[in-house]
Length: 274
Length: 160
Image (cartoon, rainbow over all chains, first blue to last red; front, side, top):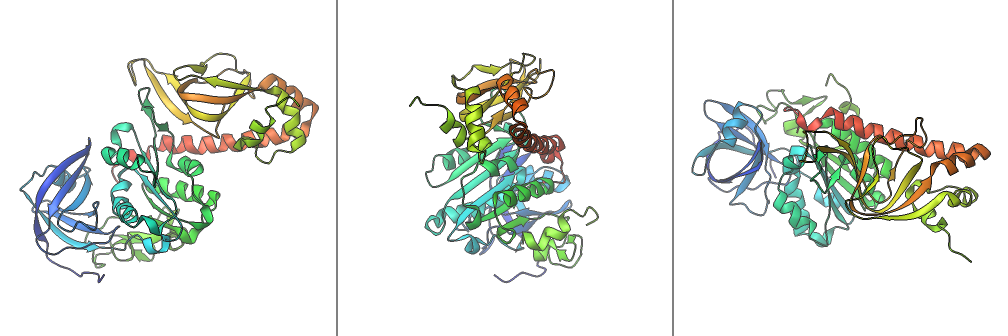
């Protein structure tokens, strides 16, 4: 898919909103024209007079008439987006960035590992894998959040758990006694998940600290570096490799990412100045 | 030939790779246990002379926190399941449990008698070294996980 250059935002209508967690909303948008994206890509969402932010597309790439973005309310633009109601409009330009290499994962096991708001950028990849289920061995979802109240897509998590062809493990950092699930960290889920490490591809998204610990756990389990892919986040502003704000070492996340193979990143991840 | 618990010990991840002679030595310190949901394997402050190899089920390590968490005032620090080990305090004085261990889903476990094991380690330092090595690795993993929880990585606005 050709990378778009600078384009003026198109204004799309909000068709639905859904409160996923106390500070997280999913917006359903109706595109103004034809729109296609690959799992892992993002759009720039714009609110006039306030600003613009990069948000991963979080829905099914096969559903081109209904484009979902899951947004955490952390600043003025995201706050404005989270407050939108059906019928209102959002400026959209995109899609930008690299995508999850599902073709690489085909023929082996696929482990999808998400921490917190990292699940939305991975959900399209999971949808695509489940839509082509016969191409993969085991498909495993490992997901962690801060508390049970912060878990996203809880209805879908229940539905995914009920499938016989998908292994789902969920954990939270802390919980009160009423929680009957796991308490612990996502890297510990890697230890107990059933997959064949030498033939496994892993897609990982979450806070960078969590991703670094998860990579260590994957390596300890026997997954090779060349089969790990991470989605990175930096302060993206232009999304078209012009402003340089999203620089990560020699890379621009908007152009060379957000999805990177781990070998590309390995040297840069632990350098605090980068 | 009477059945022993040696197959259960051999099959548990914690003892993977332990020399057969050492397994035979420690099996007399083992007992098979079943704990129903809602029961406690141990309570904070009680004497800790055992540890448990979890074979099946889910155990919550909890700490009493009056006024926090659920109506009974307990917070879950960590859950343990199949293949996990519950209990370090048998190794370290004053040998008191640091947390409550509450059964969330029926637990099948092998209870290891710490006093029995310490005696065998005194007699066979190679066994002692091997057990210490395994518990050191376990402790290191727990410390890493605890540090990650303390960092509260999901709580910062600039991170995903």
